[in-house]
Image (cartoon, rainbow, N blue to C red):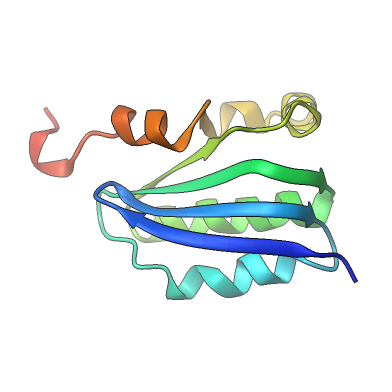
Length: 120
């Protein structure tokens, strides 16, 4: 069985989900099961940190799309951070680089987030 470690933390911008290991058919369900329990509010941002992901197949990409759908349903945004090169190439090939905002780090994603009260 594929090993995937998931760590979550909360920031003022919203939850941060850090993934480490292989995000594939055997482990993607863990991400999908986590989503309903995330405290994500209107205007916040869900950050998914992929720095530790060593492998990602189509099931992993589907889990990331489920995270995006969860964020959109909560009227929140989503950002992926520290996207490894092998995942970036897949995203570019299938057009997901135009769907997900990306940042080098979770801190930069939080800094780029604009709280709802201060949006123009």
